Structures are given as structure tokens and as C-alpha cells.
Amino acid sequence: MDRKQQLLDKIAGRQALIGIVGLGYVGLPLAVAFAKEGFSVVGVDVDAGKVASLSRGESYVEDIPSAELGPLVKDGSIRVSTDYAQLAAADAISICVPTPLRKTKDPDISYIVNAADCLATYMPPAQGQLIVLESTTYPGTTDEIVLPRFRRGGAEVGRDFFMAFSPERIDPGRTDFTVRTTPKVIGGVTPDCLEVAVALYGTIVDEPVPVSSTATAEMVKLLENTFRAVNIGLVNEVALMCDKLGLNVWEVVGAAASKPYGFMPFYPGPGLGGHCIPIDPHYLSWKLRTLNYTARFIELASEINSHMPDYVVGKVADALNDERKAINGSRILVLGVAYKRDVGDVRESPALDVIHLLRERGADVVYNDPHIPAVQFDGYGLTSEDLTVEALAAADCVVVVTDHSDYDWSWLAAHTRLLVDTRNAVKSSGPARIVRL
Ligand SMILES: NC(=O)c1ccc[n+]([C@@H]2O[C@H](COP(=O)([O-])OP(=O)(O)OC[C@H]3O[C@@H](n4cnc5c(N)ncnc54)[C@H](O)[C@@H]3O)[C@@H](O)[C@H]2O)c1
Image 1 (tube, rainbow, N blue to C red):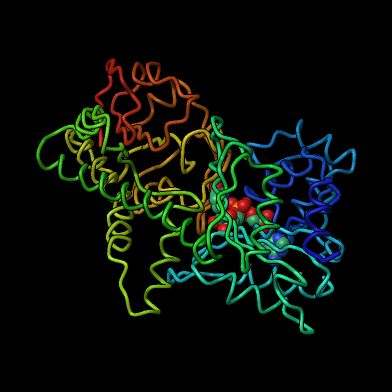
Image 2 (cartoon, rainbow, N blue to C red):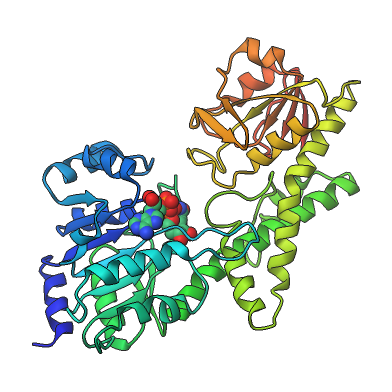
């Protein structure tokens, strides 16, 4: 029997051993999904602290409760390790390692390179395994960077081993769509690679979406996130324009959203955050720069979005100025430092920029975030303050940066003097003077 059929049979019989490389926001939910489907899963992560926590059944990913993970670790469905040798016998491996930017905003694919090198070292070539890259990256990465590392000893892709790219669409904190109900795009290096990858993901996802190549699948993910970055950039610029025109941008977007076709509302805010939207489009613009092409929408959206924290600080300065106060010496309480509602993730959060800029101008900044007990900056750290009537009274200005559902907006408005609201979260005004974006 050929290797493809062997692998297809193992997948169909839930006999395939699944390997997951990188047990973060993407890798851990994937490991749990495969284990719940009846597969044995081996997860490898270079972070010994994370591996120790997972091997006790304790999850650090909010969307995966320990109550869900614990039993799967306990009954051996999920095994975790820092040792790549544990993956030597895996039949299918998904690589879910970070793809950040360097300081120069160029892609840093060193985690992918490292993971592929380690895998290639420990996996015997030509044993019919499927390797899938899930990390978001520029078109061409799978074929040009990952594939050559597995072509050892004459091993041929599509015959001796299989390779695909399948972008992850997970949206942390979202409960209306799950791994199973979110369609998954898959591109294979060859048609046989695509067939086995679709068979594998078809066990945990209701709707696999096959595309013609790995580069197409890589580009699909970048289109999705560039679409968001550009539309958020557009509506942030509309917010700046409305400010100059004396109009309420929230009213404008809300009314435009009544159009039943041809319009999709995006909302302004303090800037982009998270591991994806501020970063992924730069993977695409970098790739295009190597082809002598400037990705103009991406550059412009990035310029507008990254200006938003400055704009928020300008709003705070104006609001304080109206009360004959300066930022310098004022106590400012920032509500929410997570990059978006109801998550405990501060990666690329605009709140960090807002806090930094306010401190630079001499403010005494404190923050509250029910999801984030402490934040670390270059050279200093802050811990979350209790949200009390006294804390609100002590603040010259309260700035809503992240609109967590835990916040009681009417209570906040009732006990605050001056509130800058970057999310249009506070509907009732009470005695507070509310300045919106
Ligand atoms: N977080 C999201 O919402 C999201 C959504 C879609 C796509 N993505 C993409 O998925 C990828 C992973 O993102 P994430 O949020 O899960 O990152 P993460 O930082 O939460 O997890 C990545 C894990 O990989 C581990 N790691 C790093 N190098 C490794 C190596 N060589 N071998 C083994 N483990 C290694 C890290 O220790 C970490 O635990 C990125 O490309 C990201 O852009 C993320």
C-alpha cells in the first residue's frame, strides 16, 4: 500500500499520532480538538514553564479551561514535552510557532526555521508523515523555507512525505465560532498533500476549504488580516475627519451600518493590538518590497492606526485643558490594557503606548484590568489597581482603552469626573464629563 493510503487509513481510524509544535493560543486549542476527536496527541514547546503547567493539566489559554484540558492530559490523550524526539513517530505534525516582526518591521521567521530544523533532525525522512505549517507568514514560506528541510536523502514530497499550509483563524475570546465551526483553508504542495491534509483537518473541522497551492493559502490569511487592518485604518481616519467636522463618528458609523448591503461596519479605537492584525500585513508588504512593489494600502493603514495612541493622548490633554489642568502632574486611570475586550493578552496593545506616552508627558498613570494583574514596560512595571469609588475620585481623568464586559459603565459614569472613552462604551453620562473619540 502506498504511503498516502496508509496515512489516510490511519486518519480515518483515528490511529494517526498527531504532533503539535508550539503550544500557544493556536497550538493548544488544536491539540485539544484532535484529542477530543480520539487521536493521541504529542505537543512540543520550547518553553519549559508552559510544558510543566500543561503536564499538570493547567491551561494558560483562556479559551481552553483547565477543566477541559486536565482530563485529556490525565488519560494520556495529550502528552507534552520540550523534547522534539517525542515527535519522531508522529504521523501528522502542525507547526504553530510565533511569527513576529523584527524591530525594523521585517518578518522574523526564525521560529519557523528553528521548528523545521528540529523536526527534520528528529523525524526519519520518507516515513509518510504530513507536515502542516499553521503560522501566519508571507506567500512562499512553506515551499521555499520549510519544504527544502525535509527533502533529505532523496525524499520526495507527495510520495514519501506530505506538506501543506493551513492558516489558523482562531479569534481569542470568541464563543460563537469554534474550531469545528470555523471553515479552514488548506493548500498542499501537491494534490496528494492536499488530499491528506483535507482528510486530517476534516476530522476536527466541519468545512475544510481546499485551495490550489500553499502560497495561495498563505495569501488568503494575509488578505483576511489586511482587510481588517485597512478597514480599521479607514474608520480611524473617518474618526479624525469627524473630529475636525464636529461630528460624532459613532453616530455616523452606526447609521451607515443600517444599510443592509454593501457596507460592513468597523469601529474606531485607540489603535491596533494583538499578535495578528498589527503584524501580519507587514509580512505581505515586506514580501512585495522584495518584488519592487509598495503595498500602499497596508503602509497607509499602518500609519493611521499607529498614530491613534497619540491621538488619544491629545484628547486627554484637551479634556484636562478644559478643566485648567495639564497632563503633567495629573493622575490618570487607564481602564483596560488588554488589546481587546475580555482577553488577558497585552501583545501589541495600544494601551501600552497610551500609558507610555502619558507618563512621558509627566502623568501619574495607574490602570485597572480584571484580566491582567501586572504589565511590564522597558524599565518599569505597573500592577492593576482595585476599581473603587476612591480610586475613581482620585483620578483627574479616567481613560477607557479596552471595554471589558466586566465593567459597569453606569457605575463608572456615576463616580467619575472626567472620562475619555475610546470605545464608545459609556452610554449614560451621570455627573461625568465624557469625551469620546
Ligand atoms: N493568537 C491568535 O489569535 C492567532 C490567530 C491566528 C493565527 N495566529 C498565528 O499562529 C501562530 C502562533 O501564534 P500564537 O498566538 O499561538 O503564539 P504563542 O506565542 O501563543 O504560541 C507559540 C508557542 O510556540 C512556542 N515556540 C516557539 N518556538 C518554538 C520552537 N522552535 N519549537 C517549539 N515551540 C516553539 C512558544 O514557546 C509558544 O508557546 C503565529 O504565526 C500567529 O500569527 C495566531
